Length: 625
Image 1 (tube, rainbow, N blue to C red):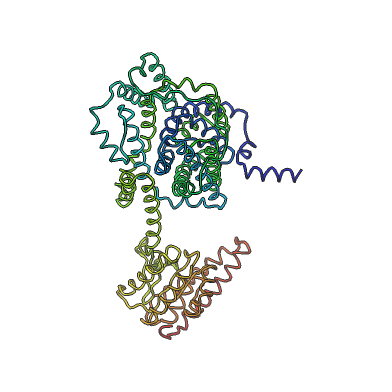
Image 2: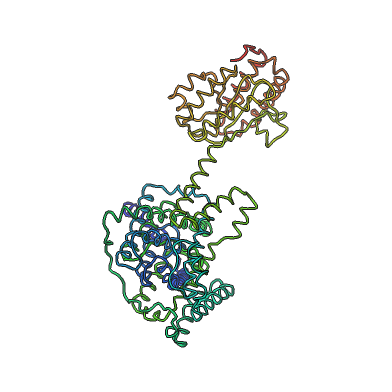
């Protein structure tokens, strides 16, 4: 019995859906079915529209979505997130494949499916290697600008459909110029259809967020197309959509194709993950379950591989469908599984119904869907809160518009990495002073009443010391000593925040010791954690600085300094004597309520107090030490 439960637990860790089924309540089924109907109602019109964004025929959505929905529901860690189609990923797919082969050809469709498989493999490998922490390196400000720019690119691609124009430019500004210069060629019936759909979509969404506005508009557009004979009026329609499903098979690609697709595949894997992890964590926090970033990578990877093997296109998370699924009351991945079944039914039996659907309607659906990605309010907030964040967001936005989607993505990623390294390289130091009447050493910026000790500067690096910030920290420390109004005899570095130390960081401490020694300043170190202390041992830093200058507490270093430089710190000695006495009395008062481990620490503190009191009674004026 125990072995069976162990096997079940391992299987549940591999397939998170099984874990969520353990506590499944029968009353949830009604809510999950409501979520499934909502997902399907949104997915069918948007899926067909996004397939065209990817340069694929509308039926490609019916090939990609069922497999993606099922695989993510089984392997992803979010219970409400919907992974099926994404406008962002669809445009990235079209940008990648369109640079290699003409749109609409058999080779184009094969490369589109192959790109989904490659992106899925990259995401799956990243999840297996536990690279989910990469999410913390995405600058939200940069992503805001990138997504805003991408939404403009997507919307601009649909404008010619709304005006009934033939042809378009390559990039955003060329497309804009094409539309402006060809406005006299606008096909009025097509414009009326597109404008009517846009107005109706916006109006229906304002009436109710739960109403499947896209599905309602799609049905009304098909009816209007039949009743008004729109195709006879030269309004472009979707036309015949083959019924059925594509058989799973590996896309027909050469190794040269694989190499050419790899940059775009990495971009899609990155964007799909960045697009999904935020909403997944938000939904998990709302419903009280954990979301694992590595499981998200695995779920997204398998979903993309499934979409590609069924001759579809690359997919991603849909924030609008996820939000609608949650609002409908979905409690588990059952909603996505049922939605996959409903989509299969539509693909098998109902595709002829879409034959008369105007292309302008699909264009309007895309424009309204991506308008939510244009977060003007967030840009305004960045402008008010911090201009630097606003500027990098605008740089990412303009990068997408000026250089196209993939270069814009690389620019956004590069900006995020640059900001991470730049901020890590800034020297963040706090100068500590003794709070009046206490033995506490606090940041003097936050407690103005705190005062430094004569001749002793106490500094605390507020982050780890490593290659990116080591040199800037050294320069800042030396500058502070030079700027100090009184001569500095000793520098005490509090290394409490330095949880790890690399070789360049250790080398910096050795160089700092030599620089200070040449100026007659003694380097003291306090609160070095075990990994930091071990690195200082291995690199010989501790030998250079002197083991006697390494203290377990800041207080120990300060007391030793005062004992050695008593004439310069006579007033401080008196205050310290009083403070040490009061601290010892406090320790005696609370000893009875302490557990054994804390009593051992108390005994160590007593020994320090006795040494400090002895040093203060008999000061050792030995000069710089």
